[in-house]
Image (cartoon, rainbow, N blue to C red; front, top):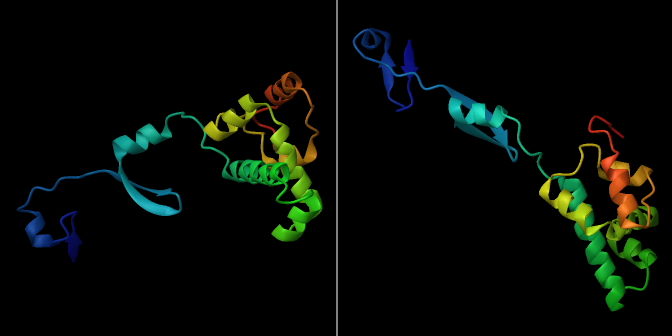
Length: 150
């Protein structure tokens, strides 16, 4: 039976009795869809509580919303209907995304940093009205239960 150590050289069972082996604890983890090898120390650090990662779906929606709003402001497109037609999307979806441009800049920053409440997702925005006043928006979003799933 052959064993392969980190050096990649084969070691036979008879050689194992003569050699000193070093055990290096490794952990396999997925990062951005790729499998990476980390040390046990790094794995322990990763297990510690940390800031949540940004919600990429929500960030993409914010980017679209502000891009579309810029197109509307510059007169490149005339309406959400035209955007929906050009993007091959439903008008209701375009309007839901465009609503994100009305958010308080503090809320937008917290989303971009990944510091928004866990329950604050694009699904939450689709099913909850956003108040016009920024102060009320902040109060409503602070009231989202971290364990809430919508």
